[in-house]
Length: 344
Image (cartoon, rainbow, N blue to C red; front, side, top):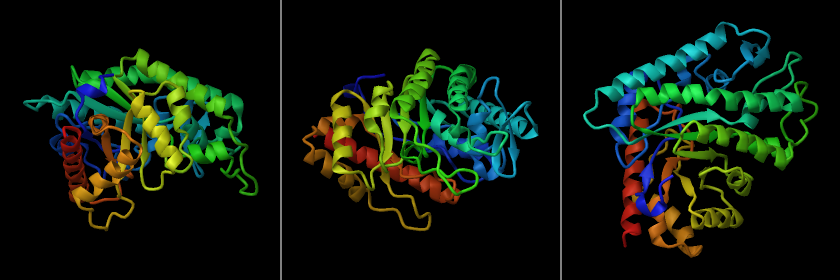
């Protein structure tokens, strides 16, 4: 990963995008997020089964078959038509990305892809008996190992679509607070699943991060909700940084982020509120101040703002395409404002 001192503040999105046209989505994203910003391979859940985050990530698993049942994605003995739809949709997206990027006069220097992390994937996949795979230690281990085994081939295909671009990976763990707190319900709904020990969480992340690094990625961040964000565990697992919404971070969490910045790690700040797709976007100066104020209070130097990436607080699948584009434009303006502060 580059030294933070060599960087400029930049913008990216979290992955989910509205609509069902991957060519249009890629053109908008790459048009808005040229250097120094980070374009991403969009996820288009509106296309249906297989284009959702769970199906897309589970399609990367090696030697574990999946299919859709009434209660959701399930581990099965042999892959079904839904697994094939997921693989086909992802392959189509990568091919279309290659066409769009190949037509550009100047391509961005990096590309981001997203995938569910091993704990949230285990919480989202079901066993034959209908319980979540998270319930079973062996299933959790198999999913973590299978995902780590599957990333190299996926990243080879992505790299071939954007020759010369550094690949950045965002590992999404939206369920991690519930996984570690033991608040995810069983199939019956009358009990909750036992909490997963922190050491097991760190080990599962380390396994995946090591596989991503071996596959040549230039940066790996873990994306988590602000609620009980396990920032120290993320960094202990070897991640290059953490992606987190800023809305409800505690003082202690901000201190963890400050320590990460001082250690040369990246912070992806979910600074632009997007919880309500109908609400007007805030002023650029207000978003910049929402980062700069706690930054200053923690005693971090303005120059360290150059290492920040700014993101929306959520994925943008619930937005209209034109509004999603406006979000990316706003984020690039916020990044420019942070750059001005960084340069004094």
